[in-house]
Length: 236
Ligand code: 6PG
Image (cartoon, rainbow, N blue to C red; front, side, top):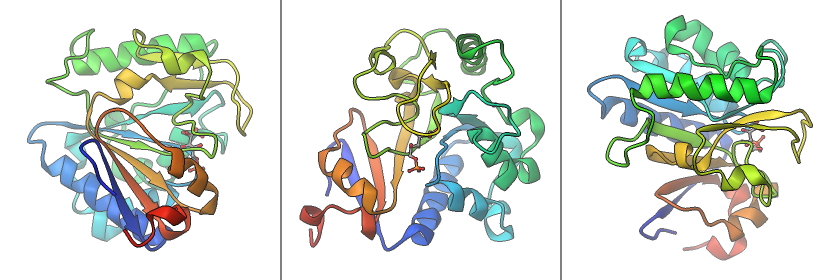
C-alpha cells in the first residue's frame, strides 16, 4: 500500500523486519556526508535490529564517529533498569560500537520527568544549533518508531495532552496508559516529524487492528511483518 505520504513494506517475519530496517538505517547514514542523527525507539520491536547492528557484518558498515544516537521516548527509570529504552539500546549495541559522546540518552537521573524533558530539549537544540526547527533542515536523518495496540507512538498516548503539544520539543508524561506504568519523557510530534524518514516497525498479530486504522501525518514508512498485516491489505 502506498500513497504520497505513507508507504507500507511487508516482510515475512521479525528477522526480515530487522534486516530491512538495518539496510534503511545504513542507507540514511550514507546519504548524509556530514554527521547523521538517528532517533531510536523503545519497546520490543527494535530489539532484533539493535542486535543485528552489533554483528560484524553490519557494524563494519556504519561510520560510528559520524553518527549520533538519540531516543524518541524513555521510561523514567534508572538507566540500568531493564525498562529503560536507551539502556536497552546501549546493552544491545551502542556501548559496544558507538563512541560515548555520540550517545544522547534522556537524563532519567533528573529530578523529575519535566526536568528531564527540559534538559533533553536543550541538548537537542544545542545539537541542532538553533531553537526553532526549519522544515528545510530536518533534525534527524531517521526516526524509528513503534506503535502500540492503542495507537500510541513514542510516549504520546491518543487523547492525552502531550499529543497536541506543538511548541515544546520534549515533554514529561506523568502517567503511561500502557505497561510499563511508569512516568515517561517523550519527544513531541513536531520534533519526531523533523526527519528525512520516519520508519515505523510493527510486528505481530496484536498490531493488525491498529494498522488498519493507522493514519499519520508527514512522510512515513511502515515496515510490517505478515502477522501484523491487516486482512484487507493482503494480496495488494
Ligand atoms: C516505549 C515505546 C513505545 C513502543 C510501542 C510499541 O517506550 O514503550 O517507545 O512507543 O514503541 O509501545 O512497543 P512494542 O514494540 O513493544 O510493541
